Amino acid sequence: MNKVIRIGTRESQLAVWQATLVQSLLEQYNFPSELVYIKSEGDIDLQTPLYEMGVQGIFTKSLDLALLTNKIDIAVHSMKDVPTQLAKGIVQAAVLKRASYKDLFVYKDADAVNGQWSMVNEDPAQFEALFTIHDSPFTIATSSIRRKAQWLNRFPNHSLENLRGNVNTRLRKVAESNWHGAIFAAAGLERIGLRPKNSIELDWMLPAPAQGAIMVVCREEDEECLDACENFNDSNTALCTKIERDFLRTLLGGCSTPISALACIENDEVIFKGNLLSVDGKEKLEIERKDNPFTGYDLGVRAAQYILQHGGQKIVDGINNAK
Image (cartoon, rainbow, N blue to C red):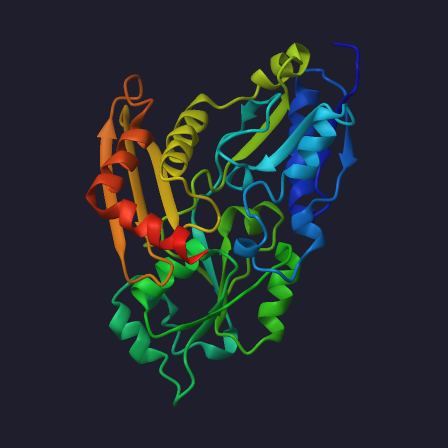
């Protein structure tokens, strides 16, 4: 390939970091490339909660358009932001090896109670007792309806606030606010060296499907880019994220539906965990399944169908009717 591959990316620090990583991988296989910066609707509107913005593809539409109009050759995305149904004419070219899939609670230093923040991962009642401050409710911030639902399921008396913006903006808002803390994706903060010391991984919180993974997409007919990206496709991550996204798609979910999923390959087995919650966190359905990596290709679909048949359809209908 003689052409310079044009890599489309959003302008946030994290997005540029991800695109630069893909650029370095292409360089390892002697494919020249350059970054092309594209604004997304999700970057322009930093006030409206994600679940009021049309959600699916809010961070990918502008890059999709740039691909389809031949302004760029590939686009790099945080995979959890990508709709489960790609735009017509666009295909998955590679999935990079997954980083941390964990959600991270960044807390206010001033609110520390004898260093016992680790209680957030232990007994919920004890944690609430530790941080009962007069009549003021314990308040955290996140724009993710999935994180809100899981937090409220565990801590129903807490108050949640909306938090938008890139990771730098959100960290600043936490520091300047009167909130007790906020929830972030660990991978996003760690990739750009911004994970604060005053943070703790939420061991009980199941992640968004494909959280921590990076996806590269290109035009369907672009064999050159498909061949170039195949060099750094991680097959295990691709399989696990496919299972997770199948679970999401089968439940007909998006950013406005509290759906979580995680697939991992351990000891030659695919281990899948998924859940579906009501928006207020009061209802929760969970599933865990194991399968062989060679026969478990449709594991996410089967798990979602089980959830729907055992009470999940009622939760999904309730969420859709409330929109």
